[in-house]
Amino acid sequence: MTLRTWLTEEEKVVVEEDLTRILCQIRDQIIELGAEKWAHNSDTRAAEIEIERVWRDVLSGKADTGKFLEVCEKWKTAGMHRL
Image (cartoon, rainbow, N blue to C red; front, side):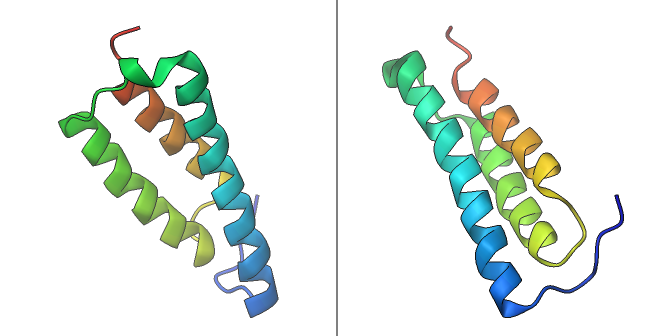
């Protein structure tokens, strides 16, 4: 998949809505699995930093939403380690 290195303002709004939807879906999965099992740790913090980086990369055309979903899943796995 070829990505453009720029998005129009209207496209950015749509992409940001998609990214927010993905992140909220992962959050909802954590809640469904049992939020009390969530543990914030160095791995979750590292994943949060990666989520922020990939968010910016998607908006600048350097990554796609599939990569964003991947790092969000990594965040969920890192925090739900007590399952």
